[in-house]
Image (cartoon, rainbow, N blue to C red):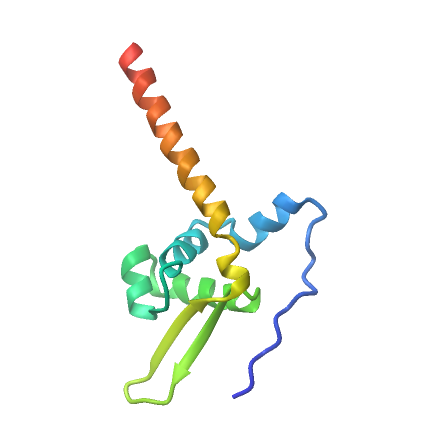
Length: 118
């Protein structure tokens, strides 16, 4: 089956931050990217690692595939096997997630110190 072309004609905002939020603003998409950074995963693995419901995970994976962030590979096997992998565009967001993780760590430390001062 031929692949659908990536939908690059979306109504993207002028603000670059708004573009990022439009693409990964949902917590589930961030968790999916986080869990695909080490490599390819199957649907069940993503469902378990993200804690996302089957319905929401299916919707988010389809959106991310349409946006060109992930690639879906279906194997002609019984039972069917489907694997998800980040595209080069998907991998390019890793530094953003690294920065978010560092900020989260710093904020947790700030909260810990602030609570000790009370």
